[in-house]
Length: 90
Image (cartoon, rainbow, N blue to C red; front, side, top):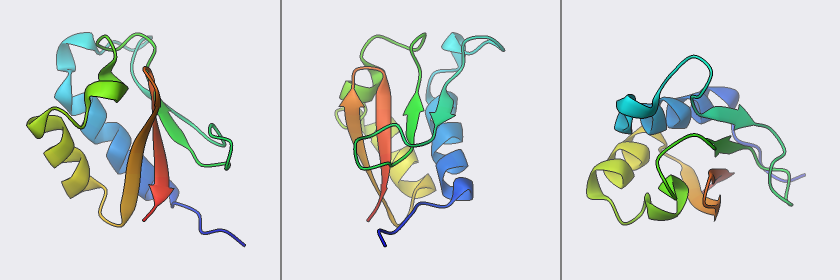
């Protein structure tokens, strides 16, 4: 059986993503956890209303990647598309 990522760790990634772009947050337009988003059944942080191509650019930004790595110990984070960040076990 494949390893799964705990809900608590996914929530930490969600929080780190949201903290990087507070100007884009609103009750109706914040990032969300979507379980089984990827083909492998992994969850993803999805934010259609977020900054343009935020998921594709997160590795290029030192502040975003540093925050995500520190929050997501033991995880592998990878953009699925321009609005979704896959959360996988490392």
